[in-house]
Length: 282
Image (cartoon, rainbow, N blue to C red; front, side):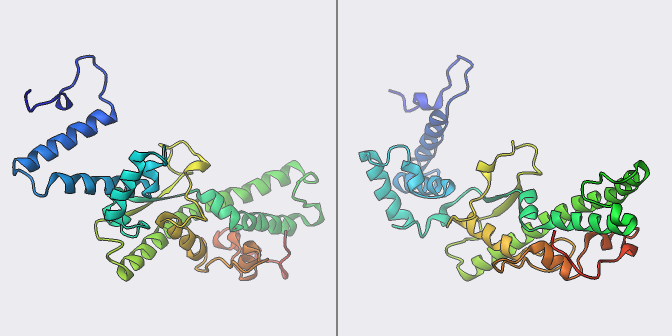
């Protein structure tokens, strides 16, 4: 039989080859090149390194055998992986070929941090300043002219919120990258130079359907989760250079307002409204 096997030929049915066919063709070509001294290494090393790269891209050795972990095939694959990436995947990331992706929803984050409460607080303060006892959050006691006026007040606040969200995304991404570089400096063997980290915001990237299932796990122990945890705790809040105060029972919104970081003060045409003499929790 010719050395050119069916793994390197495509059928004429017009159907795209499946992943197995593509992988088999690529691996056959690579090992043939190795055996013909056209590529360095050896076939066994190539297969071992390739399997380790797949496990690293999936996130763990267990992910490779998750479909049938008790099978004899799974046992053999697990033994091979342990000889390469370590019994506890301690060398796993050195084989990764895909970027580590941190997936975040900035709307969820800012809501949890109380940022939207601060915009509401600014609106309530200005409403009380303008309309006194007629002002209520429901606005059911305002005249049409007064309703139009408060809508004019809210428009630049809404624009500010969009700018703040963009600023938070930039700061969050910078915090993730800075932390990753710090981890790489502390442990260069675990996090080699070829390894990269990306941050994707699910509420921004319309090419992906928004799904909570895609979001990075806050409680995980993988690298993406660790970076997410760090950035969530240390990213400065938009409109200020203060980090979130995660003290138990502490309201992020109240901490910001008490420190004088009222959103409307950053809008030139609203700054003259000042702030209340005391900050009340909404």
